[in-house]
Image (cartoon, rainbow, N blue to C red; front, top):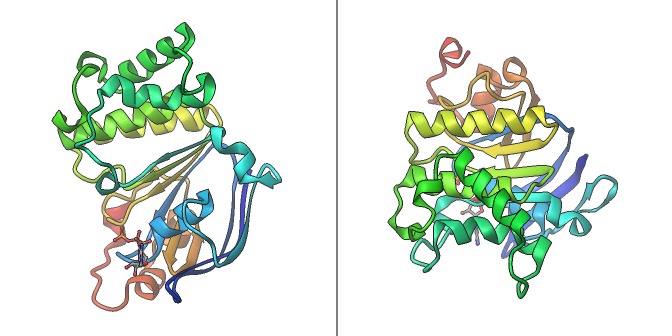
Length: 242
Ligand SMILES: Nc1ncnc2c1ncn2[C@@H]1O[C@H](COP(=O)(O)OP(=O)(O)OP(=O)(O)O)[C@@H](O)[C@H]1O
């Protein structure tokens, strides 16, 4: 479904990501892990064309990804969102429908129903008239999750969706991820806390500028790979992770 070949990104001549290649298939939740500064966010932004690539090829269903942007949902890191922007919860989620209705046309009943369903799914319908800056961290993540649902995408990228959320919101997010997976959607989820990584993911990409390991939990999360990616001094207890 998504094919990335030899992706490389430089920032002002300094390499952030190099020679990253992988394929994503439908119906998978793929965790991207690696230390701070490993290039996880950079990799995703370069895949999406949000920042320039030094080199590499990205194909979605054998075509250029640009032709399929409506089918790709991206939820950036919380720190990248302007929470002071004056917009309600409802309208943030409705933004996902703009590609379907256009900027200047009023939103169809169908879009309104889709937005409502998405907000209800994440338990945020009651707060639909709130300004986004007036929400807690967990509520903010739920709103952006709802926005990705309302887009009715095929491929989803989430950049650190579990930062600042409590266990209840974490459980809601994973329930929604699993529903999407069983609808044969593909999810790529960035996280850097190894404790958060568990059997909930089908596959992991361990990144430190390039892919250190790619596979299931046992294949990726082992002492050798973790040391390679994180260096010495990382306390590793596999039994905690499975
Ligand atoms: N806009 C930028 N300009 C210059 N360098 C950047 C820029 N964005 C990121 N970098 C650098 O690129 C490298 C990769 O950063 P990136 O944010 O992709 O890593 P990450 O794995 O997502 O990190 P974290 O887990 O801390 O979010 C880092 O060294 C970072 O300092």
